[in-house]
Length: 168
Image (cartoon, rainbow, N blue to C red):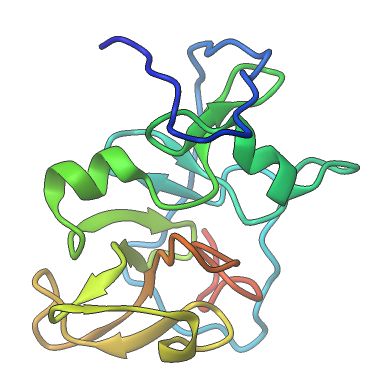
């Protein structure tokens, strides 16, 4: 697919190139709430259903995420210096393709990540806890499960104050 610059007057072309990566991510099959919630690191802290890794809301040390947002492509992703393409915010290609309420990935604690809409309502930070999620039924877990939501226009975008569960 061709690359289109996003409709952003402050867009800055990312100087990095995408390079194939090999990851080993350990994700619990049966996630549970953690007794001691761990902070997310500045690396892959989850995986989108298209195989692209998820990074937290922080930019590289010495970089400002609000400035880095201007290097995102039309799907809201970009490569870092070692070539790892990743998302810090809503993976737009996935929500456009699968739906705003779709299951779009999983964090390393095993809990699912969904798009910015639930039951026809756009989710905001005020609907979510400190970890950027809540418990409730989803299409994939009709009996309910803790799950995260992306909030495309509100920091922390994917995850708040660390993992709700214990990462693998």
